[in-house]
Image 1 (cartoon, one colour):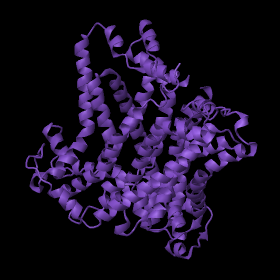
Image 2 (cartoon, each protein chain N blue to C red):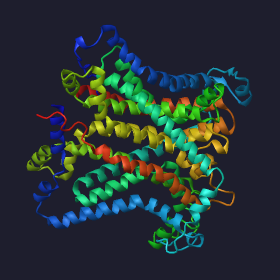
Image 3 (cartoon, rainbow over the protein chains, first blue to last red):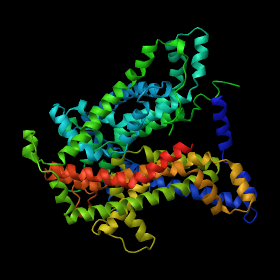
Image 4 (spheres, rainbow over the protein chains, first blue to last red):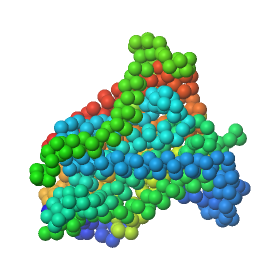
Length: 301
Length: 312
């Protein structure tokens, strides 16, 4: 039933460009479409230009970077900037720290938020609404405001300048949103699916793990992407709480790139590219799962 | 927001009564522990801290000196704080208005373009969204470089004035304009994709009917699309306000981690007071005020959102 409704919604929601354009006669349809497409391409180009500029700067030799008349393509092409960036002190340490922090945090966050999502989507219990209100309310507090007490909290636990402290904070920051999103995914999976599995002889737990769990896959992916981006991109907490250079994350390493003589743009842009690549890759690899129609078609008729 | 959904009935025979009662609590215990321990407790501590004189000496001794509302009094009579508040509010307003306006236009454009262009534009948005903020700040810093920045070159070439060796951050008004551009550019993808998802839900029958009745493009947007998108606009405006009011990274990193007081936002001001001059009590009081102002500013949106959820 739910699946059919969802399918109808998707069908109804398709943009009907043709029907809307056909009723206008004043401007020829082809010309109008061309104007829209040209505007769309222009907007895409404007949005992408900064990223394009970063990447080509990273591949330019130094003398082509500092020119009064900019070079639009990396005509003599070089990897020197990347070699330079990687050879900087603490690069590998900080890559490892970022990976450890994000990895551990994500595994914990997925497990914890999944449990809470199931509780709030599948069970009614006293305090459920209070819990949901807390989840929403907590997201309103800007993290910047909490730096001082978080610092003191970790200080009293002996976790300043240590990865576990930062992992715990990131965990708390991403959890509310992840619970909220996952809850929606779990709630969208019809209970009928589990019930029919139980009629066919599955235990309740078995039905859950064989039927519901696989169907929540796209939801877990979506929330994982969100958590990954949040944690990988975080700067201020890591900057304040991780003071020694070999304990820092990639974003802190990147922000401290400026030397006394001003930034060295080539290596800096190479380093920025390297920092951005994992997020973009993670996003692009996983985003096709996001489009998956959840349970669409799982319950037919 | 689904708060009012009745709990699904799972069939009473399947569970022992006490197990069914305790099980959901067991499931939410880890989340409650983490969120309460790491966010709720520090939030209380922040308020407590803001009522004390707490400097470096007190930090080491783990013992503050109670001053009541003294910190607040000091801040509220500080002319710099007034400047910072006004500036932060104006900055937030400009950013949110531009973000939501431009994103809505782009989202509507997405409905009109052909498939290939839609994929291109969507990919561009996703790319920008996935790029870490710290990375984008470095890119913009390079593009706005006074000597070799591509933006000065382009503006000069387009005969918009002589921008050779123009330093954008000498004049705070120009500097803030640059920050508006950076923040809006970074915020557009999320808002556009959210609004676009909402636009897809508007039934075409309604738009067609309005057109048959003689409504022009603007009227169709004003009287059909906009009211249907109201819940989405509320959430997007609310979130953007929270994010833009607390802007820190863009300004702090771009100005090489030592912004002049012309470029203080409330978040930066609080940070400077705490970690720059080790007045943690004052810093905490500023942070509390930041949260309070946010509550006042977003109260309307939150109330409307809850109201919308009740209607639905």
